[in-house]
Length: 268
Image 1: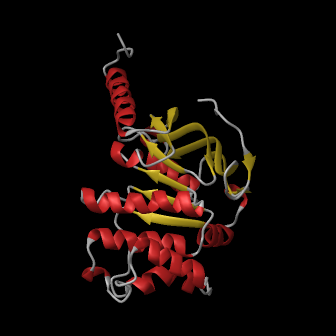
Image 2: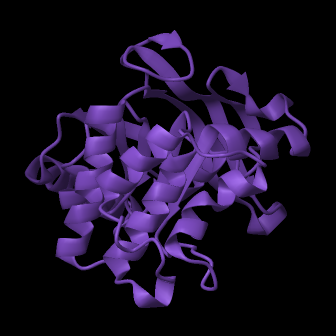
Image 3: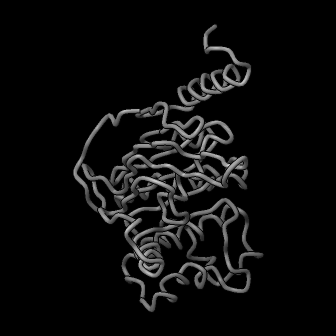
């Protein structure tokens, strides 16, 4: 799919490209076990936007996120974050970039059970030997509604509260971009809506850049843009998505996938 827009390369903010991929190829295995997870993907992630990545099971959406976040080395092509090509970095430099420039939110929360909520939030900064910016940290805590839960350990928090701790942890260092992998996948609808509302607010009020992998049309409806993958390719995108439009697009992709498996042409 040709890129629909070109914007200025930079670390973030409206009108800039916060992260990009060019001719991205990711192959797992060799020989008869080889699987091409991504094939010649071109994509721009724009600063100050909330972007969802969706697609049928096996379409490559989680692989795309892992490659763009520097969690997985690519086979071919180029990925940049904040204008920095990841392929040119050593393992040490890549680790530093992920620590300083990228935030992560995972479906399983990934909190340390022996630490309090506050200690979990501040852990990445502590590892980096940095102190939180007082005003920003206070803003993050107020926004996530965790002020009265900071002394609690994960086992003493609900699922929604744990995910809000994970969101606060991702935001605490003011990263250039946050990657979220199915952040509401383990939550009930009410808790999921709270987390999505917080992510939406962080984009609208703090100009945060967020990329979210999801299978949920309702979650995608909170975003500015939805990118759809199928069989390792970017096939289409939606601007100003609604759950209904997302569902219609997903249904169409599922039908095309089923037709391909049956050896039929879509629409035949």
